[in-house]
Image (tube, rainbow, N blue to C red; front, side, top):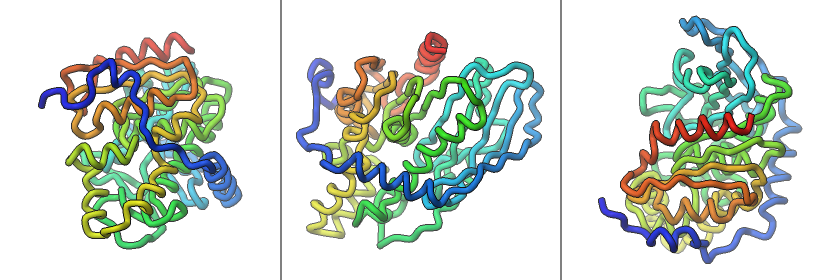
Length: 319
């Protein structure tokens, strides 16, 4: 697949022509306050992960509406972590098994890997968190679940879970810097969690999904954006309602509320998350301390292990 989006100089300047809802901040403030009122104490239980140098704790915390959300907390066995990385997962992924995900711990950090409610059915990584809330008819997957209204949309619940995971990280590793991280859907969640939380030391946002919905859904035929197209093909005339709902969850809008330093990545041949949609969020980021690594010949895998090494250096410089 050739480079298909805007030329790189134009991408660096690109901003969507749609605007964020005027009450974006108020909507999220009310959402978080309502769910905090329904919350319960975090529960932790050590587990045997079969590893000699990593300790793992099974974490259950209160997310949206007080619903239980699962996470693994990994930490070095014999030293105190110097930071904690809160990681959010790609589409359809789950937190997996307790012996996985040792890379951040090997660098000396705590690592909280957060389940995505109602997902965890692909990539060999199971999920352990249900999504107990129903919704109107939707296309397969979660992209259109409850899409008729911002109050019922799936990502209202998932983004709330993500913001509360930051609070949990501070409970588990008091006094150390908290970084947010994720790729694809996890990158979009990272944008939201950073925007909805205070005091984040840095955000690692790789090839983010859930950004600039109006452009993405008319530019790529790949899933998961295709789920929205499938829905609109059957629900003719629903475009205004759908895009109004999505505007409250769009990374290109939420990014403006984020004040932490950030490191993005983008693949210029990415058909899943077109480069302009990534730059839409990056260019809107609310802090001038921002950096983006560009991979001209890569699809949705982005920089892969090359990007991880850059991230390791970037985090180390801020700890």
